[in-house]
Length: 108
Image (cartoon, rainbow, N blue to C red; front, side, top):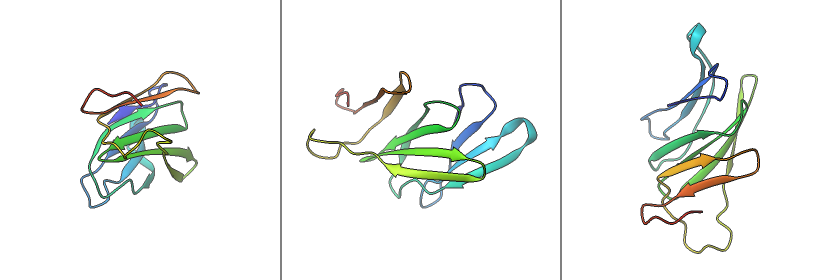
């Protein structure tokens, strides 16, 4: 789970078959939206701003955009770094830089 930068929203990842993510208006105990993430495990979730966040896990990075009751996913691309890596942690520096780390200490 992680709070959005303002603290108004809370994103959580479930233990269902697709490790679904949900965005909550936690103060009013109301789910705003949800979406499937990936059949493989999710290890971290990082908010970029109030409407965008990413999940990382076993061989995946997925970016989400929240708008109203909709949550739109986009699979992250690894570019020319080679084989798809397992990502265990992530951090958004600002609106342009997203950093992800592998279990071997590699930064993507």
